[in-house]
Length: 212
Image (cartoon, rainbow, N blue to C red; front, top):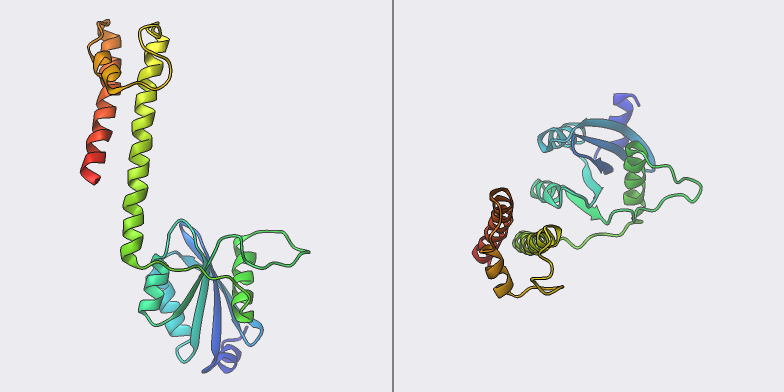
């Protein structure tokens, strides 16, 4: 669309931006008064996005919508800090026509812009930064605990494989079982393998203790 026409249509009006997020690029569909006035794609850097919005629509009330994803709410934080309205919608909840199930970044950006303009969307509850940080710590603790379980499973399977399964009870071991397993007499290569498994277990236990 001609630049002069765009300026005439959007001057001092509401602009609705659908942003399709990916690791390297952002696809943007921009709508105003029921019409897509611009579609663009550029590097996924906030400075580029900010310059685009501020320079192209300086007198407009801008609203941006994107789907919650792997990047979390960092983009929401930056947009709201710059006084730009931002909506984060749950993934796969964007209204789409029943006749169309095709998904591309371009189509998704246009769908997002359309539902934002029609006020036809579901909005994520945005947790405050402190709560988000606490959630990251909780996720790490869960991951560390899972690694501890995996390390213990490796040790038990190791003894099954080398024929020591009759020495230890099937199923879960007590800490006494693991303590005894450390001192089992083995060949140099098997001992090195077992020591490696226990080193992994000890490292994850130490990390768990540090995080708690």
